[in-house]
Length: 150
Image 1 (tube, rainbow, N blue to C red):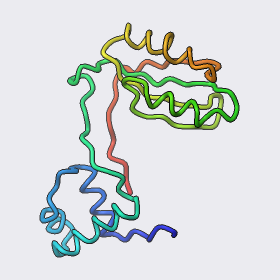
Image 2 (cartoon, one colour):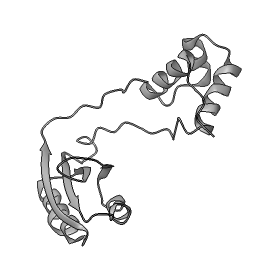
Image 3 (cartoon, rainbow, N blue to C red):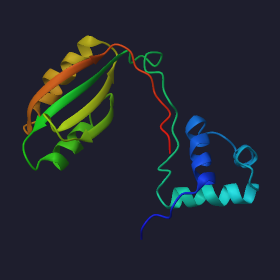
């Protein structure tokens, strides 16, 4: 079944929940100018349709003891994405995995306590995956989560 189109109120609700996933239905209703029942029904529909995949906390990785962040690019054996993806999901500190086009195949975001742990992750864990042909590590000096638009 194709997804139902989102209207302006749905987009406002998504915007609000991205900023504060703990917002009450009442506060959502008040801010988007609909009844509580309407806000509740819309949020449930967004969840049921898979538009909202879950609710999560935005973490300050440095304050959480994960002060080193890096993007790691991987070249992998052709047609091994599913196998590699499952192994990458198991890596400690992995926060984002994407199959991409271009000069490499996979973009991986990791957060580790320090550079030594990052080095071990790359040299021991990643490079021991048979389907990984090569890696390149891009150390993040500063990062900021942006609230994506809908």
